[in-house]
Picture: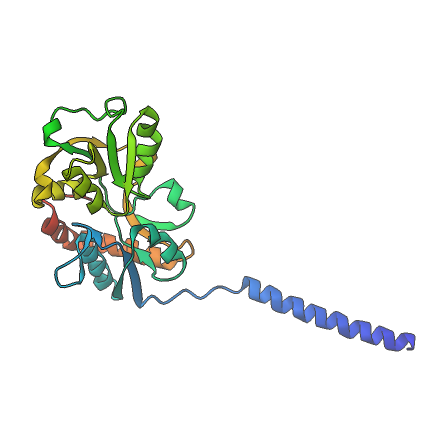
Length: 270
């Protein structure tokens, strides 16, 4: 092949490479279109009254369900709810089964490694609950050495017990749901339970099993219990975070949040 032809082939190849590079660069710098959120699929446990639970009619109910519906109404989007066991909530979110988690999930640095969060929509300390027959029992790590203490698995309460109380000699039992831990406390198989304060106060006040027991002490170490309760989100869904954050602010400003709060609690949980 003559030198002139070789130079022509080389020039054509160079032009093609430049065009291809331009296409790649344009794709890299082109802005990603924001997702138009018209429907939000919400994952919740459905086993954590009064925040989320399955009602007698089989529908998901509770403070967080009413809250999510109010947010969706305020922001003019549709809510759809999906029940998911607690341990599967974050994997289900990451797998795309739903878009947000409303399930009393604490905003912690450990969880932030995997998912994002909205701003908080309520704040709650944790509470130790003990059998009434043990009234006066203190619940320090030293006092519960040799005792059996329960919590729901994969929660901030479980981590706190395992890292603080187990090292002092307490036996820690973890349960798939809070109801199962409460049942074992009422049956005498546990000496204490650590759980969300508002959940336990509701159980003590409204359930027959709860008559067995009483509140002992609150715990609120931010290193373990985080920055409040927020909606769990995929990290790249920034528009959805903005929508939910705005929704919480809007319903607090309008008084809707206060009305929902009063339906379930005699005090402000925000």
